[in-house]
Every structure is written in C-alpha cells, then in structure tokens.
Length: 188
Image 1 (cartoon, rainbow, N blue to C red):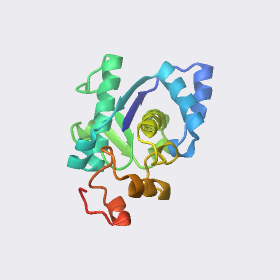
Image 2 (image 1 turned 120 degrees about the vertical axis):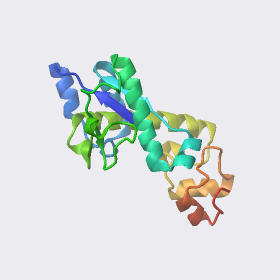
Image 3 (image 1 turned 45 degrees about the horizontal axis):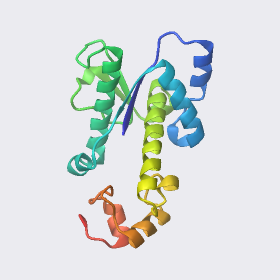
C-alpha cells in the first residue's frame, strides 16, 4: 500500500493546526490517523496505490511497495491534472529506495522521512488509515485471525488462527517467517 500527498503552498490556520499533528503513522493511534486522514483528504491532492497479492508474491514486498507508490502518484497526478512526465515534479519518499520507473532527478528518498517531511508523514497516514479500513473489512469476512487488532501482522494470535483455521486466499504463500514458525512448507 502506498500513499501520495501534495500539500498546498498556502495553508489556512486550521490546516496548519492539523499538520502540526503529523508524525510517523506507526506512532499515532488509529483514531488520530482516521481524523488526520480525513483532514488531509479535505485540502490536499492525494493518491492511494495498492499491489495485488499476486504482484507481491511475484515481485517481493519491496518492489510491490514501490509499485504501490507509483500507482498512488499516478492517482494524485490524475486528481491534480498533472503528469508524472512533467520535469518540474519532485517526489519525496520515506526510506532508501526510489521508484525504478521515475527519473532519478525527480525523486528523493529520505530515511525516516515521515519524521522530517510533512508530505511524507501525510502520505504515510492516509495509506495506513486506508489499510486499516481494508483490514477491518477483511476481519469480518475472515474471522478468527485477529486481524481487527493485529492488522495482519504475524502476532501469536494471528499465527494461532492460521494453525486452527488454515491460510486464507489472502495469506502470502511465500511469507517465509510465518511458514517457519508454523513448520509449513513454502507455497502451502
């Protein structure tokens, strides 16, 4: 899941107050992420991109994340009436990696960028909130895995759900850590 946000050049006092709360999305409560996400969507251009389970398994999680980010940027550009081919765009992103399909001079990777860039923090928040909503829906469709509280991470409760109920079509068949903990063969 990737998020993209373009902040306006001029901010109202209430928008500035909202941005004051931006932080690494993992350090915020789900309720605060939801509130901030709603505010961000109300005055920023935004995009959310996703990769399918098949793409994650084919590409690996790293490259699927970059594909998700590219799709988020495409959505943001469409909303803003821009093009990713424009030479005056600068894409800043969290981490070390950059998007293979964009020219190097159009992007900048910033390690722990969600702690130093409002745009990166805002993108992280809208992506994580979107992910949280999707996981909540899936927890209703596939009860017993504790997704509503563990958000799909391999917690002991989640692993117990897999041992009891088996894997769902949504579980990554090549997620080595889970397979090792449960003594399952890969691609099982």
